[in-house]
Image (cartoon, rainbow, N blue to C red; front, side, top):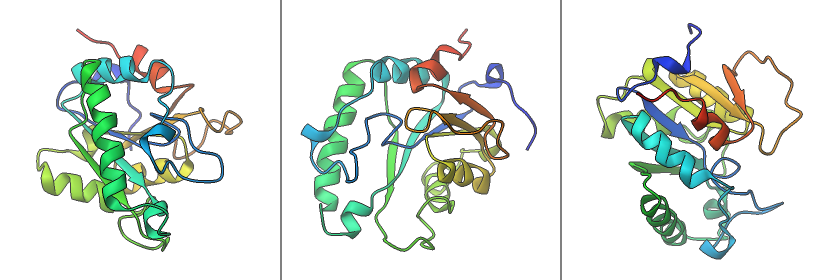
Length: 187
């Protein structure tokens, strides 16, 4: 993987985003089961508006074990995502597709850090080029997912401010999605 500069990003690039701990606050010791438990981080919608003009495609890839554990249904997750997307669009942003892994098995191919959700996105959007893709997440498994698919990685310190850096699977680190978006050079 060659080092990259955020200045390289243009609309040929795809942005892959984790959800919990990136777009919204994680729910301590549990899962976001209903939309009233979904709380955007400050300035995330503005960050997504900026990202929408910088990236050709924006995809969410999220592990959702709450479904596998029977705490919520795929329908519940869909309702959360429909309402989330409506708010993002209202603020001038967009999400092109959401992929989730609900398996309880760590070795399931769709579950991060395995690249299954990236491959599913590429099957739906054949123009996705992983060498022109960026994975943004708040866990090392997100970074490994990005690496396993051949992407560049951006680590957000939202939930792990003490993450040691530099780290072999982290290309760049920022304090939040908005902090990352402010560093995108548009125009």
